[in-house]
Length: 167
Image (cartoon, rainbow, N blue to C red; front, side, top):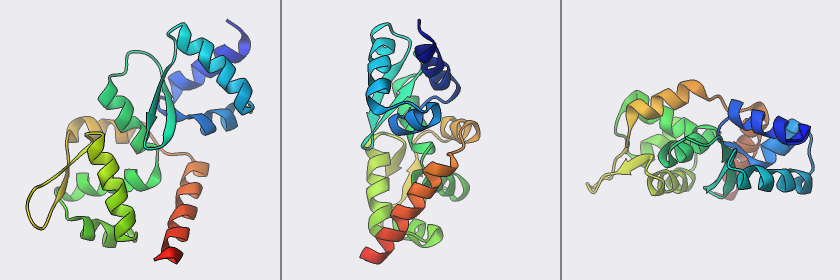
């Protein structure tokens, strides 16, 4: 295995759930170069790819599908904030999440729907609806293991600022 593939594989092992663009930035690889080597790594079974919430994430083999999806979300600031708030406060209404996190209701609704679609949170059938963590113990372990990078947090904050102007 070439040095570039070894670097990519080791980076994915150290940061399960790293998304494609972050991987390229961290390793200073062009998109084409990264795609080429990732295809080899996927074909030989040393890296697993999964699209979650519009981004492609990479994992070492052996991580179960639910954990792959949850890892992808805890690496992003806004979904992570929602997950942390649900862990701290228990079942919460989306409007309260929006107010607590300083986000637009539409932003929270979009993220909650994404999290629910990937089985990370559950939405109640009650009126008013509440949101809760689907697997609190496993989710908490992932929160403790993963801290989003500064560039990822900055991108999330920029998107939040744009969202505020569009309200």
